[in-house]
Amino acid sequence: MSKPNIVVICSDQHHPLITGYRGHPYIKTPNLDQLAAEGTYFSNAYSNCPVCTPSRI
Image 1 (cartoon, rainbow, N blue to C red):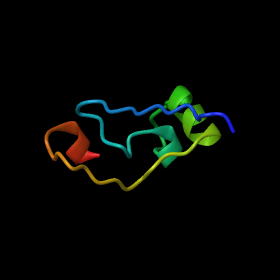
Image 2: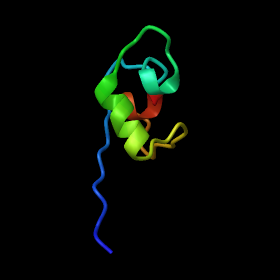
Image 3: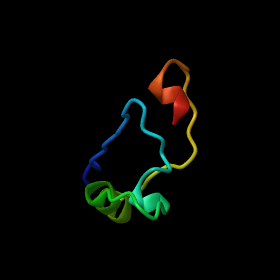
């Protein structure tokens, strides 16, 4: 079994619901939509270091 490719995207000041794959009617995010469709995304996560961006996702 080959190792999976893992991409973690954390952008500052970017609310997770403002993406096409989460159902926003006006925002177009084709690259993120494709990553979400072909892979896995987590809608709930926990941060062991709640500072800045990781704690807001």
